[in-house]
Length: 97
Image 1: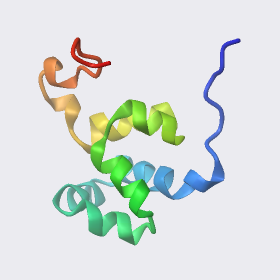
Image 2 (image 1 turned 45 degrees about the vertical axis):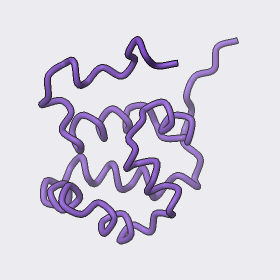
Image 3 (image 1 turned 90 degrees about the vertical axis):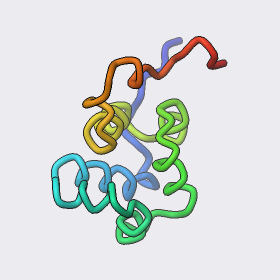
Image 4 (image 1 turned 60 degrees about the vertical axis):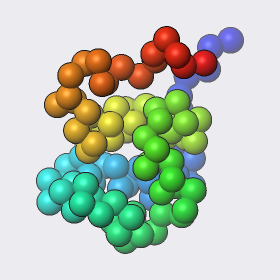
């Protein structure tokens, strides 16, 4: 049986709201890049949620319950990985398990 991603659990609302706002608000995104902890605290994220975002591991983010489209936006738009060479954007490398 194939399991597709469904709507995120309501407990993940704050983290999705932050990513959504970061994606659409350039000033907030710039503040986040300078001091991510401050912005995450403003959104009421828990320590666990903050650590998930700071590590920015897409597999961990997905397992944590973050929507795959939001993961994509967070990594490419918010963190700016889309502006880097493709070699730095690659998620699955040969040395990964």
